[in-house]
Image (cartoon, rainbow, N blue to C red; front, side, top):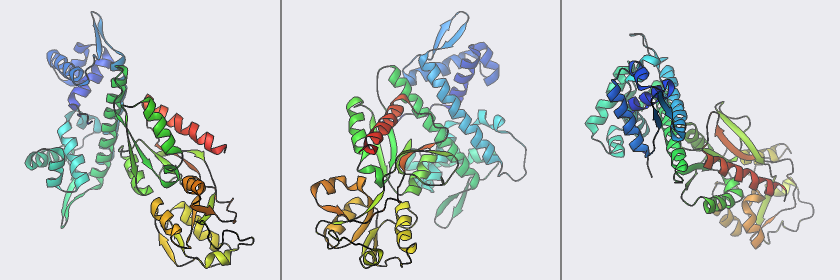
Length: 407
């Protein structure tokens, strides 16, 4: 289910009325008449299917839904204002303007157009994605450029490229839209209507162990909350997390953290193991050494991943050349089938292959890698504010990880 992005001017009206608890006091702040403010609030209440204010003779006081919405919209507008401020740093000369002056003039249409074009890198594709005409999309994007007095898009031989200012503001806008989405979820929960979606990025170390268990348990408690699991390389997941497309990541942590706007929470740190098919010639070896391991073909992750770093160091630190007969993949299924059909070896956490070990399809070779503990955990945006349902999912992840760590 998708949730509409309300009129940004209506959102500013709501915040001012909540702040001053009065339509008459808010009116001069937003340059609207009292009837126009009343109408704007009514449209928001209709959109949210909830009353946002209790009307009394001495003022207007936010309801429980109003307090939730005020928190989320405050965070939303903060993101937009910071994004404008960062984008303005890229302006070369021209008339001076502040983020506070520009913010009231922005429209939802302009912001949606910018996000769509920056994502598609093409006005035609962006207009199709939004379901609007290309001319209206182009007009909205250019109006935003004129308002900021900064170029946002540049034509290239392959389409449209985004300027640094556009990238900064588009990211801030996506985070702002994510706050609105969170607000919808929380207000629906107040009406005992659990709706929404948890969007999480999954990496291999979590996919076959704690994550399936937690998803099944959470879904049994909250059947109407969808769970969208995105499987992709770490760099792509991290970008989507920082832009608000994902709520959090679950999998191997990176040290040091690659950027300073994320937080990492370790759940468990199992060691890696060298794994082969059942009946492999090395399975019964009593004196397995690095020279013997170097003679075999391997299936390994791509360069830059933590496991690949451990793999390379295993040989280099012992004065041995890294094996050259490598198949590089992070696909769990492909790794399993390559091992089953050959004498190849792999380095992997036993948590990832519990099922195959129980069935006797694969086995762990007698070579200690106790020094290769890989922290598995949760990666969050530093200032992310989860909904109660998202918090419960995270708590269930922590509990499941605790049970695995005790095994």
